[in-house]
Image (tube, rainbow, N blue to C red):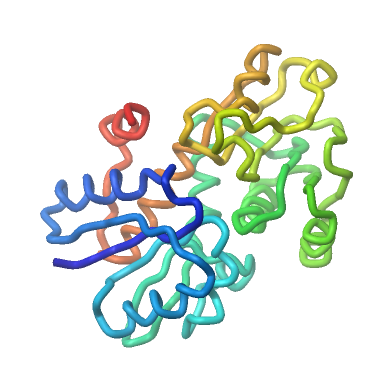
Length: 265
């Protein structure tokens, strides 16, 4: 039986095992997918499990999308561009890091018919998934990308890599059409992002990368003001679909059943 993991810390919220095990069953694949909470010191050993055949593939989530790269043989073009890996696979005896977050994000917006072209996007956070979101927004033609992060030096590092983005101090607000929470604030029930929802008003689009819980305080408060909201379930589903395709050369369906599976957790 083939073995797959998602690694991260925390990892309890991940629905990756639920989704991939469902797809294994649908495609008659003899495999099991598990979540594994790890520390930085564990990563080298886990990658060696792919090298020696104990594990077939790995998904990577917070906070290891960048730090995992040094243990790989190669990275895909998107992974190189973003210095962010969320899928690891073996090809011709080489361990390769891929990035399916960029296209996962793009497909999630296409699915809900949201067109960012010519609009202003505001990103909260500077973690592992943020370079992928910046690249995706730029490819989709956002007119302006604003970023704010709790740790200023991390935001400035992204500005060096992507000079076209604008930085503002954490807690401040600038005019936007779409705001994306790409922090981990919201994974815990009482987590709150320090922004003034009254000041923002209505008619904006609030998108949270977090998909479990289904509605973070960020989305709940935005909805109260009459804003459109969306969690990260479709991005999650599409990046998983692309990861599955890298492993098996099979593109599993993201259909009504899959969406129900994710929503009924």
